[in-house]
Image (cartoon, rainbow, N blue to C red; front, side, top):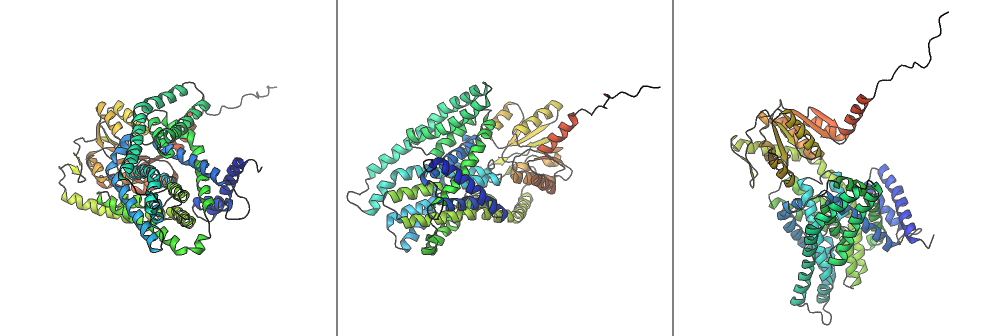
Length: 575
């Protein structure tokens, strides 16, 4: 099969990934460790089977594209704009801090200025795959912290698009070659052209894509062919991503993200996400395998201190910078710690950038090996950092409780509730039912409550849903129900019941705990998506917690007709 490198790379990568991931799971290590080790075994620096590196990298790129497409499906433009005040300055400042730290490390060990600059810039960019996987595992994708992290990621992506265009010119100037003087006019022209292309791409997607993509999806769905629908989803995701790169110079990832956002305008977005999930997961595995293939373990023996210093910049320097920036913006400590932990790793854009540096003869192969070693170690450490953050949850909960108690003591009951930037007037409703989260389940509950004549109050943070609720005449408090100020404005002391329909276990637990504290007699009914979530919500004080699969099984059994007695054998005739 030497003439089939694509087949060998895919089969070898998947088989080795499964083998080592199973071992990692058995040893209670992160599964990512197994994927990376599979890549090391399949790479050129270890004996035996060697996969095709460039092919593996291209396959991995497909995984990143599908991952960003999936994120875009659940992410609206309003979500992106809602975090622009923290994501834009935060990402740029954090990148600047990490770049300077990388340059200082290069200066300390005697690297040229150009190499130090590229190395530092490569250290500043977080991995899309690692960050999004962490957000999914922590069920934070649709939370404020998840939106900030994704917005931060998009800003870094845009900055890297610009950096890759300017890198050859900047590098030539730093290296001091003949005719290498950096012209301000040339730089301005290049920057303006790049930004113009990005703006044009976004405009095309918002004006044309927002209408065309949902229409295409709806038209294909009406054919009744699931196979054709699946193909349409993949064609849109990959086609837009490729077109964005070829026509507008935008990265594959950003193109796929916007394709997902535009498809998210369709009511079929959930089905589209389901169709891409298997391919996304498979190619994501190949992404980590491709990283492992690049790793030259010899650098750990020749430059151990440099690798550790680079790792410290990624895990400590970047994290502290992000932590300070988020806290300075007025966000809670919990949000700041989540963002800092999410960004404490580097990945695919770092490899692309350092690869361009090597191709331009700005960066040595040794510096590239150092970066790869630090990147792999940061990816392996990231799950453990999130476990530490989970262990800090009781302390953070106690801290939030003390802060809320202090705020309650200072805030008169009749005054509007405020977080310092936005005021939420205390609702005048009483004997009302509160629905926290107005997704599909929340809407079904709201319709039935209104049909019964119950007084309804909705807590919802998505602006598009809030607009619809206002049009329907439903009183709505806009904001995340897990925020103390939002929940406090719902007048829970006078409420009859609360339905908690939020998809994230953590946010649901916060709502249940706070609601029980405000009104011990309140009826609290919550949804759960796992046994662990069910137990967590019960511990926080929910009266009833419903798990979807359990309820479906119960209702299906209720609909099962009773078994009829067998009358096929007649009684023996009397003699």
